[in-house]
Image 1 (cartoon, rainbow, N blue to C red):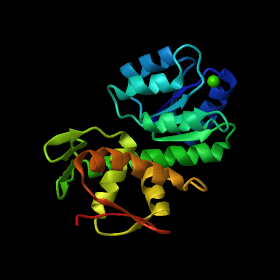
Image 2 (tube, helix red, strand yellow; image 1 turned 45 degrees about the horizontal axis):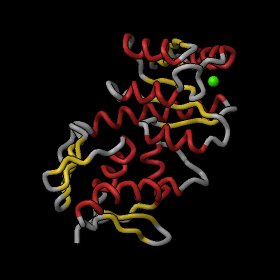
Image 3 (cartoon, rainbow, N blue to C red; image 1 turned 90 degrees about the vertical axis):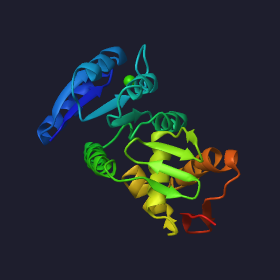
Image 4 (cartoon, rainbow, N blue to C red; image 1 turned 45 degrees about the vertical axis):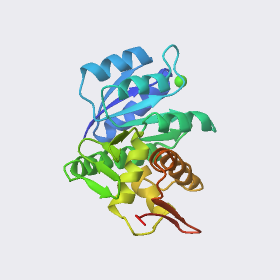
Length: 227
Ligand code: CA
């Protein structure tokens, strides 16, 4: 099934999640602060981390940043209600998903399944070959993007979005499909997350190079194409 690490300082919540996950057949470890959690990630193989943002000492965002320095292990953030800044910072920092407390355990289980599924899909994609569109090259294996000869640094989410658009080049993809493919579940009511990330991409792969590749199709979604 998979090994899951819970990093959560509220021990009652951590124990509750642990029981539910074990009941579902997952192996579970717990850490009650960021430092212990980080140490476990470094020393044990996990398939996924549930990471609370509000931790004493080393907070969740910082733990995530340190994990991403050496690992692309899937991370789902546990955030407080309406902490929009946390969500954006977390997703930019390379979180795979987040869930807002308090949550229904069924929702958490669904997010975990979706994230683990997506990890498996990613590992298949990683074996495929380079995607090229004009001056833009994306190497799924190395997870690198070049425009002309310049290496462009993208966050995990930006990379996945660009990768998906390139796989569908010249095809208009709608926001909901993008959300399902890249965010991995139905992101009801927050489809503007796609628009935000398209803006990030434009600022990185178009504007510095004077290129036009990403097109908005009003009321539908986006298409990547070379004029
Ligand atoms: Ca907490």
